[in-house]
Image 1: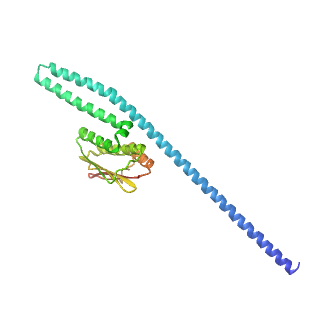
Image 2: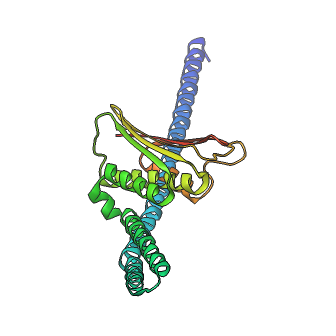
Image 3: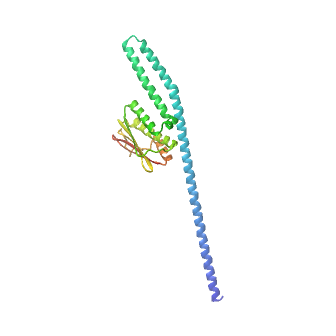
Length: 259
C-alpha cells in the first residue's frame, strides 16, 4: 500500500467515524427531544385532567348548593312562616299579658329566622349571585353575618372596577364566602373586613379578621374541606392564595388573580 493510499484510507476512516459520531449525537438528541415532548404532553394531560376534575367537583357542589337553596326558600321558609302566623294568632287570643308578650317575642324571633333563611338561600344560589353581581352579593353576605352573629363587618373596593366574567365572579364570591364562613366558624372574631383592590392587571382580595387565629407551624392553613375549596377555586382562577394567622390576633386570606 502506497503512502497516498494510506492517507486516503485514514482520511476516509476519520470521515466515516466523524459522520457516525454526528449521527449518533443527532439520534440521541432527537430521542431526548421526543422524551421531553412526551413528558410535557403527559404533564399537560395530567393538568387538564386535574383541572377538569376540580371543575366537575365544584360544579357538583354548586348544584348541591342550588338544590339546598330551593329547599330552604320554598319549604323551610314556608314552614317557619306558618309557625310565625300561629304565634301571632296565639298572641292575639292570649288573655294573659305575659303569654301575649312571649308569643309576640317568638313571632319576632321567627321573622328574623325567616329573613336569615331566605338571605342564606339566595346566596347559596349561583343564579342569584350572578344576577346581583359580585359587589352586591358580598355586601348581602356580610349583612347576613352582621344580623345573625352580631359581628362588625367592613367592605371596601378600590381601583377601577372591571367585570371578570360570570363564572370567574361566582368562583371569586365562593372564595370570599368560604373565607368569611371559616372566620365566623373557627375564629369567633369581633370584626371582619373584606377588600377588593383592582390594579392594572390583577385583582387583590383581602379577607381579615381579629379572631382567635391559629399557629401555622402546628396547623396547616390548607387543612379542611373549606380551605381545599378555596385553593382549588384560586387555581382555576389562575391566582395565588396566601393564608397567614397568629394566635389571639387573627387570620388573613390574600388572593391575587389576573384580570
